[in-house]
Length: 348
Image (cartoon, rainbow, N blue to C red; front, side, top):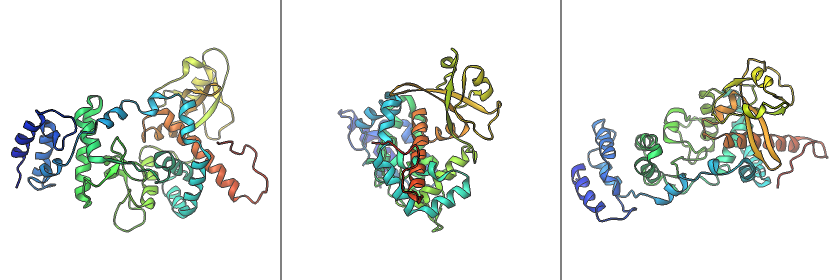
């Protein structure tokens, strides 16, 4: 049986020969060796099992290129929005909803998260399961955990979670594919989120986010509720602006930093009245660069709950607006009216 010591010594010599994508080239990292020893000590893996596994794992330079320029950080809203707000994505969403209507209804009733938000997250993340990612998750997490210093500790923790997750669920770690950041399945859960917040929503005594959309729907709803979603409250509202101070109120923080009352004094108020909101309601001002210039919004609690899924204001706004388009399309489809409703979608 190959021991950790033999694997470490042999592959450190291999690493000295050069190359950046050789199988097993992670052996030189003491953090990985310590992780392996810990998982063996905890009897999650048998001695030598992980050493053999990582013989087949390579660093992927393409992943390092992608993580350095995510769309959420390199595009303005006017360029980001068209990626997701398309007629094709809405039509596929309506079809997906029709197939799992009862599941969406049950998830909304159980967790208080609107079906439109759940559906929109599936639409933004994987086009309702149509694109779950093509990268080996173990290689994505190892590459980012050991060769991407800005967030290496986070990805090393996710790598450990992934190794435990796959062992506990009888999955081959080399077979699981996902995003370049290591997210998996219909909802693109990271391993820690899968282990902590994924649910068996169809009662088959197994949680499967990769092939089972029912578990994915229930898990997204459970995730948002666990992260603070408030039933019946909006995520964000378009702002009316006046005066000269509204630009200074705009925040890029991923949390509420003000209140509706304070924002009103700075010149930002909801365009339309929203029941249940008061001057004391926590809120933040948002400024996005739209096709016609600056767009001003007021972000509320549920908007920032969406950013826990993906830490980006653009992402949360895409989910919010796609949810609105999906809900409008479903209402129009279900309506007996022959004419399109006022404000019908103008998506390309």
